[in-house]
Image (cartoon, rainbow over all chains, first blue to last red; front, side, top):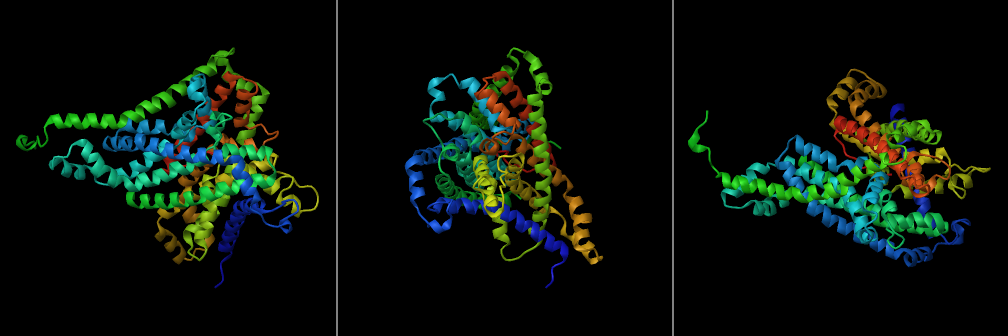
Length: 263
Length: 282
C-alpha cells in the first residue's frame, strides 16, 4: 500500500517529535550506566553510579515518597468531601470556589511559593518542617483530586441513589461512606495517582520552600545537575524515571477509565 | 399543580441535617484555601505595593529596561514555543488520532510521557542534547553548544509543550464528527484538503485553547530556565533573583502578580474554549 504524501509528512513529523523527546532521555539513561560518559560506551557499563546516588540522595528519595503519601492523605480528606458538596450544589458559588482552588495550577509555583514565604516564612517551627513543603504540594495537587472526583460524581445519578438510601433510613454520613465514596472510586483513584505523580515531580514550589535539611527528589536532582559529575546526575535522573514512568502510566490508565465513566 | 399532601416526603429537619452535613464536607477545603491560598496571595499583593515606590512599582516594570526586556524576551520565547508546539503537536496528534497501526501506542506513550517531568529534568535533557558534552557537539564537527542560549531554552520549553498540546488536540479530534471527513473524502477531497477544510476549522477553538496552555506554561516555567539559563533573563528567573539575591521583595511580588494574572487569564480562556485542565508546571 502506498501512503499519500500528506500522511508521509505527518508520520515524519510524528517520528521526529518522538525522537526529540526520546533521544535525550535514552542518553541520560545510558550516561547513568556508563563507566565514563566522555569515553563513551566502550568504557563499559556499571551500576556504581546508581549506588553512589543511593548513598548521596537516599534521604531525598524517601522524603519525596513520604511527602507524596502525606499529600495523598491530605488531598483525599480535603478534596473528596468537598467534591461531594460541590456536586450537590452546582451553582455559581461552587464554580467560583472551584476556580479559586485551581489558582495554583495557573499561577506559577514560584509566585505561590513567594506568597507562602512572605506570610509564614517567619514562623520558624513551621518554616523549617516538612509540613511547609507539604502545604505547597497540597495546594498544587488538590484541584486535580477535586476535579477528578467531581467529574465522576456529576456523571452518576447521585440524587436517586441517595434518595433510595435515605428512604431506608441512612443518614447523610452513612450515605456519604456507603454510596458516594464507592461510586466515586474511579475518580478518587485517578485523582490519587495524579496527586502522587505530581507531588513526586514537583520542583517550582519546592525549590523555594525547601531547607538545606529537607531536600526532595527533584531538589536533589537540581543539586546534582549543578554540582555532581554527569554520570551521577544521569543515574539520579534514571532513578527518577524508574519511579515516575510507572506512576504516569497508571495515572493515564486511571484517568481514561474515569473519563469513560463520566462521559 | 401542587398537591400538598404528597409534598413533604422528608421532614425539613432532615433537610437541615443534610445541609449542615454538606457544609461540614466543604469546611476543610474552605479553611485550607483561606489560610494557605487566599491570605498568602493577599499578603503577596500587599507586599508588592508596600515597597518604597508604592503603587508605582507596577509602572517600574515597563519603565526599567531590565524588567521590560525580560518581559519582552519571555513573551517572545513563549510565542515561538507556542507556534512550534502547535504545528508539531497538531500534525502528530491528527496523525495518531486518525490512523490505527502497530506501534501507535508506543509513539503515543513517548509523546505524552514528558507530562510529568519536572522542568529541571527537562533542562538537564537539553544539556545532554546541546551542552558542552552534548550529543550534537559530539556528532558534528566544530563547537556546537546551544543548551545555554535562548535556543536551548526554546527547545526545553518545546519539550514540555509538545505533550500538553498533543493531548488537547487529540481529545478534540476524538469529538469531531467523522462523517464530515468521510463525506469530504467521498466527494473526492485529498487527505490534505480534508485536514485543511474540514478538520482544522473544527479544531479551531481547541487549537486556541492548546496555544493558550502552551503559552501560559512557557511564561511561568521556572525549573527549565533554572537549570539552563546562565545568562537569559526570563521573567521567572528575574523574580527568583530579585527575591533571593537582591532581596527586592516588592518587585519580586509585583512581577509575580503580573505573571500570575497573565497565566491565569490565559488558562481561563483555554478552559472556556476546550474544557481541559493541564497543570502549568515546567
